[in-house]
Image 1: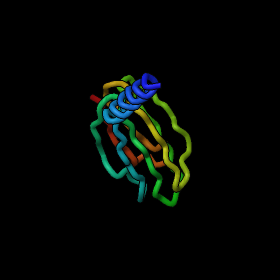
Image 2: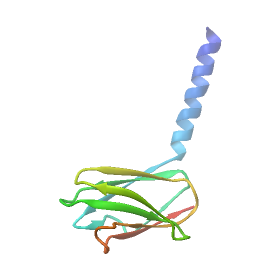
Image 3: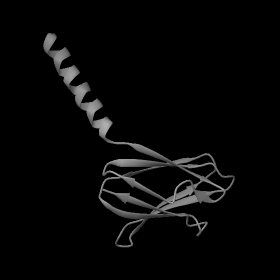
Length: 107
């Protein structure tokens, strides 16, 4: 029985230490702009994009080669969670509102 508790404790320690390395950054959308024009993350970090606007938005993530991943429509109040696993520079756009732009640099 003691071995089970040791294993459970080791698993918990690994889980907690792994979670400590990843971070979530909060970016809001209001007045048809992103709350920050640029952010720098570490590989494995995430961004929570929260639509605090009264209109629908769209999150599009473009990588350095120009490939885009469309996250779909985002209604007011909705959150889109995007994890950045690879190093590089990413451009974030709203396909509905072309002036909404930001850059994410992942180290």
